[in-house]
Image (tube, rainbow, N blue to C red):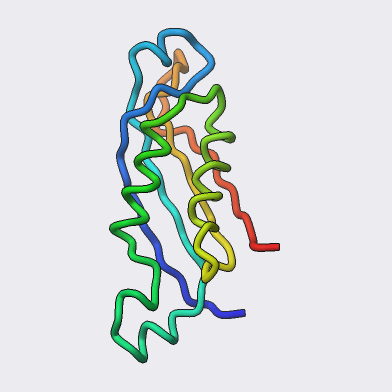
Length: 121
C-alpha cells in the first residue's frame, strides 16, 4: 500500500440537494474535498499526465454530480462522488468530504460535513 495521495479541496458547486422543498427549489453551495490514494510512481517517472489522475478532469466530473440529480442526503451525494473517484482503476481508496455550509439549522454554526472513505474491493 502506498502513502501517495492526490487532494482536491474546496471545490464549490451549486446543487439542489436536501430534504426540504426550499433546498431543492432554491439550491445552495456545496464544498467538496477529495483525497485519492494511489501509486504516483508511474507519473513521477514519466512526467506524463496520462499516468496519473488528471485533477482538472476529476473536478469537472465531481461538479457534474453535485450540480446534477438532487438527493435528500449529503451521505448519498458523498457516495456518488466516491464512485466517481473509484471509477479510475488506479485509485485504491478515496476519502470524500461534502460540506453543506448553508444547511438549514436555526443556530449559528460554521459547517456541516459528511466524510466517507471507500476502498476498492
